[in-house]
Image (cartoon, rainbow, N blue to C red; front, side, top):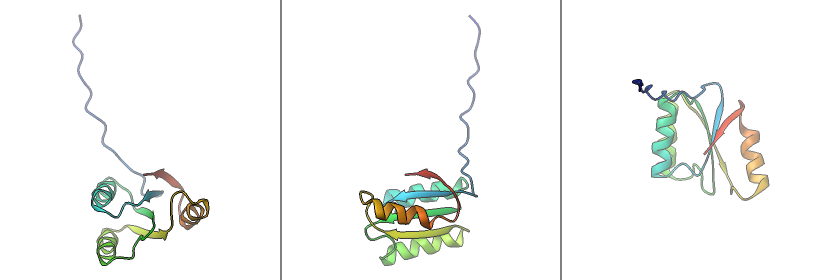
Length: 100
């Protein structure tokens, strides 16, 4: 029997040149995930939600992301409406590499 050395897990690296679409994403869990994504390279985030960007809390968080060099786009709409999803995709300035 030979000894095997486990490889360390690969560190997540998101592409700063691409966009990531988050459905909802401005609540507590979404903010934590967004911050994690930014810490790992994401620089273009698009949020699709019924009230995306409307609240003072949303605006404060968006301001925080922008201060970290992130381009943020908010699109008001529903994920189950094709026109809303199409608008969110059309807003992307760079290719969408992931959806959460």
